[in-house]
Amino acid sequence: MNFQWTIPAMDTKSRRSKRLRLLILGGLAVFLIWEVTTRGLASYLAESNPEASLRLRAGNPRAVLNLIQTKLDEAQQQARKQSSQGAQSSSFYPAGLDVRGAAQIRRWAEAVLRNDPLNSEALRVLGQLSDGATDKNETRRLMQAAVRRSLHESIAVYYMMQDSYFRRDYEAALRYADLLLRTRLQVADQVMPMLGALAENREGSSKLKQLLATNPPWRGQFFGSLPSVITDARTPLDFLLSVRENGSTPPTAGELSPYINFLLDHGLFDLAYYAWLQFLPNEQLNQAGHLFNGSFELEPSGAPFDWQFYQDTGATTKIASRPDDVAKHALFMQFGPGRAEFQGVRQLLMLSPGSYILKGQYKLDLISPRGLQWRITCARATEPLGVSSLHNGRVPDWSNFDVEFTVPSQKCPAQTLELVSAARSASEQFMTGTAWYDDLLISSAVQPQTFERSQ
Image (cartoon, rainbow, N blue to C red):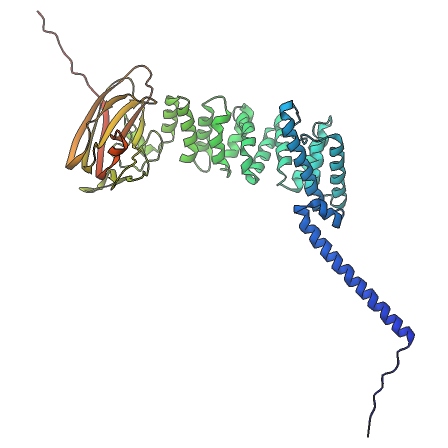
């Protein structure tokens, strides 16, 4: 039996319906492809070329905001060019922006807000454009709204910080400063002048001390910058002591050092020494005589009133166990072979005017044209008050040395004790071997009493 299959003929109406469906599906596919392509390309161009992005997708919020920022940056650059001609603006109103440009940017920002009422960038831009107008409340409202929607709107946070400070709302000013420093530590230079002013304001300083007691992550930056933004050299010490007494974490050496160095740079040696003593551990205070840690039993802190030494080219300096008694420590140096760029070992002293004697012990196995030498000078002076003999050659057993010197009553508020290379030229810097020093002590030189024989 033979079977024959036949396909029924499609009537004209069915063919038209199918063709229409295919056209609709094809058009929809083209539309979807175009939609996906333009959206993706527009999003990509929003960062690099916002104007091209807007030609593809009008009203793209990201592209509009980037275009606004581009225009603001251009206006700022124009203002910098005109600054020599006296162009001025407020702190937040974009410098160099003319009336037409400001109106255009305002329209763009308002358009973004119509599509995204909670957009923090658009709110901040409107706040910037309103700054300098008579209604400060409007500026404050817009900037505050921007901050509420994004803590990363740094311009708005900075505005609120300054606005709060000028209104003497110091608690709010510190809250915004804390927020800004936690999110944008690189703007610390702009925040520190206000913190410095608060540090020397009776009401503001107490609130600032409370904030520092919580050990915020920017505390180290604060103490590093504080000396440069205050008028009273004692202010940083007041805050350091407050943190020590009330803070969860006491001040670190890194937080104390900028203040000590600031005082020394300004010749305030007495205050620097006093501040250093305030943060010296109780168990180390008994070492703070004419010379600190002369037995080298404490690991140097690197502070100016402690031992300072460096890792030099061709020389190694450290505190090590003594070969003859591992329970004791001494200053140890190893040189060479070859040329040694030895920067020295030093400590800043605070000796009253009078006569003194430096005593110590040393042992050597050193080959050098000149050797090593201890020198005492007035701080920031070059002419020594006293020098030791040259230490060179082989001295296998511990030997004593001493240096007598006199501190003058004028122009010598502090002194520097240094162990230096006695080389006078590059050719004399070649050193090979080792050197040990221990049990250094500075004491007053007691002058023996003399009596005249009566006639």
